[in-house]
Length: 312
Image 1: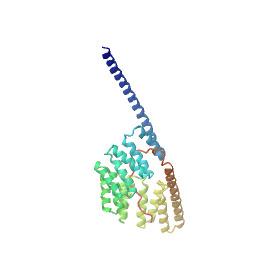
Image 2: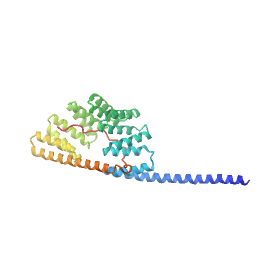
Image 3: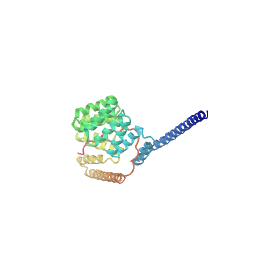
Image 4: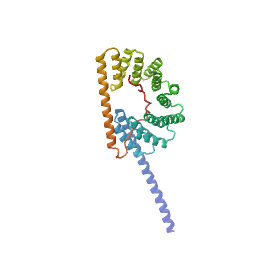
């Protein structure tokens, strides 16, 4: 009798403890959710400010709270990609894919990193996988086209860009990249047409202005080239190649004073950018032995390289 009572009491106590434990678990989850939401608000703010170091730190904290969310690894991969930390970016995109094997943007962005590393076959493979998962994913077609362009496979590149544009006629990078391919083929009129369309879609597209200027230069329309380089600089005052190429155009017109000013400005910007790059690399090495690197930004897959044209 007593034994039965004790058993019943133990069962009752067990149920009570389980209920309390569940309540605590729900409370913990709510607290974690609010904390994650607050951290992500800061992530997007800092990303817009360009404060990538803090973005990485914030996202790493989010991952610590919820290590099973593929989006957080993807976002941190975006930041590492922006910082050209290729190994870390690949690691994060790979982790996002492990968690969610159908994550097309993660494949596409990992392809971008492989492209940067000139591992073209891996890049093509990742873009192909993204397309397999989502046949309507325009950035993957455009990015794969950019790899084909680098490999000199121009018709394949044009085909991929055309598919991206068919899927999304407002996708400016596909017009810009196809313009690059036409430029490589020395079909400057078609190149100018595509750059112009890219600018219509995105009036702040500095690379399209720069590359259209490059095409005008090849057609010896130097004033139009100067106008486009100037617009690219207006949008991006740190655009070293635009200063250099504008200097070349001025030089061809006999305006050596302005050409020298542009060459000097281009050299200054490039030296400054090299110093910044060196500083970031030294900082990365100095902190390499420390705990996990930190967070990254919102799901805005970077498009493939746009400014691929060499200086004249």
